[in-house]
Length: 508
Image (cartoon, rainbow, N blue to C red; front, side, top):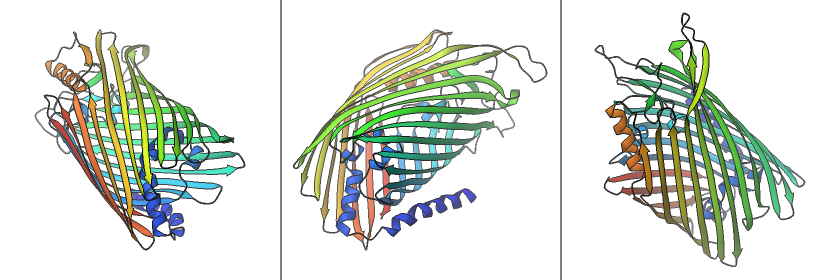
């Protein structure tokens, strides 16, 4: 209850400055909503990861309060550790506020609750962040979850210079009410700061960030006649040799991260060259509570992403081109220990048997046309290429895949008197690609089946398509928005995955 009260208090604080500026004409508010949601606003979002450049993100303030529900169901789980579906509801408030000609304020507060269904081979929260060093079993089940997330930032300008700061915090709880019963408590704190300078028609920015992460990951069993075998996973079907005998049920993760970025963007509007490069490093140590907080593994992750693009607008037409690239690397270090003295273990060495390299390259075009100020339409064709190479050197295991995707996104909106109607759609085809899975030293059939399932689905050809319809209506200085969306992925010979969502929001 205390956390929920803090959530609603935060929402109220965000709303106050926005409500003070709520007196604007209806047409202006509808145009602002359309501008925030159109494809050009999302064209190169990475230039706004710097709190200083967020000063230039929008021209007009907007605050939104929304309630939404989402659900999804897959005939076959694309990734067993993520489950085969979910059902979630959320309350959310977000603001970007132009306090004055020289200051900007933004924030977000969100509460999410629900469940993820059919989760197996993973009893640890934030799997995408912590794999391969998670606790796992072959039974699994549905997971209930709650999450609170808060973000707040401020930016100011002095002459040609802008500066900004931002902080965010996420607290999450995952649990299951039947054996095996995980209880995972996550705390994730981030800080970012940056500066920028205006050089003619362009702005150049530099940013830094820091992160502190922790998770308590515990498992309980209430059944009196035994329990599931718990695997202490170390990558590509391997487990810890000394501490992977099925009796490790209490772990915790402690980590930190840091990073930096550089951005280039037009000082006015969205016409001109955009570019950004961001580097991030994250290190997490896995401790075993039952062995005197023994530091079993260390996972080091690095990310380098780069974006470059150009857009221009002539009369009614908008044209743009953009290229994105990302490099991901994971290195897993496993510590070795000598004989126990009581419950103390002396570390005598370490090895780095696990490595994972991923690459993604994306190219896309943008074309838009406007009919006056009230009717706009955009199309965005794109092409993606993915590459993954994962190795477990000690066991000589390897997973390698290559695939690509091409598709089209559309966005159209129109203002009709006091209403705004928006329509978005997308279609994409992921090619089957090629790959290699070599796991000669996996001893247990159930572990082998898990790896083979995930590998087959990862390189299966699929077609993705979806649609979203949104209606907004003005009521005395504020707007009601109602939206519904549907997405489907069709996997060749492996069924479909369906996702649907509804949203009701209030805009000021």
